[in-house]
Image (cartoon, rainbow, N blue to C red):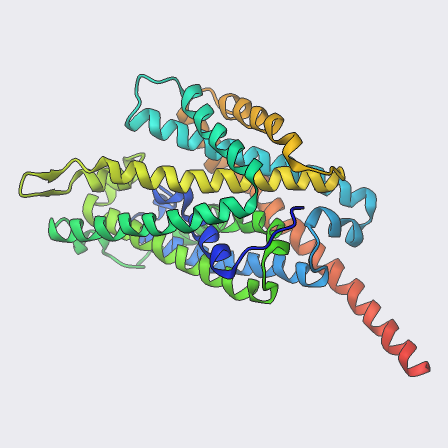
Length: 374
């Protein structure tokens, strides 16, 4: 663990950029059709509950990483096994997001460039950032946060001026579709991207004022949910439900419709910038957390020694987890949420919280009894 601290603002913007990540540019929750915006918003509220579970565990063991305090909760052996599994989990999700970004760029802009090259460039950037440490990542996030919102506000203004929004495409609102909405929330939006905040449990000890972590995280998750919800609503309003459901990158399609005076058009660069910024911070945080978890679990002195091997592992996995884009999407939407996200994002944390609560309650009772006897 590095000897450095993050300001409240840095922690906040890192969460926002991480949560929006690739979710801003790909289609999440599209099965909810015109109510996609609501499924995302509801998913963010559930994500806040997940976040509170993990933060509550941290309050029992402040200034410790999960790979350390899990040993105190369930014992050294089981705690170490959980630590190994979470390293694999973070590495695997890092590879998935890297593949998402690579497929996106190859499909949109670099059609003649091998996927390996695009992924390799992103991993090289992440390796450099992780070697520099969490403070450099946080400072980079501050700069890119302003750029991301500049692109977002500019894009929204251009869409409004172009007169592209058709509110009729958002109707009927929340009618006769609750079963589908809840299914989308439970299997998709609650876990991606909001449940992925499990990664920030390894960043809690870096927060300068750790008591602010509960509020900062909750507010950042809610705000990112609102941002993604607004984006989804705009995409549906511009594209209509059929096109929204059948396009790989709805935000790109929306941006491509912008045309003002026959000279402001083809603003794909906005999409590319948003995709790069979001993907970079999601990949680099998962990458950093996997490295730090390994460093802590194996009691290594310096995380920099294992950055390059991890980079090669993530790059290899990003190439081999699926043979093509469709297989990759099916794996991410159908296999990963029920079999991987649910146990790692909520199942294990809830069990750890219950055990930690009982242990600390017993400890408090023993202390109280000792003081009375004394």
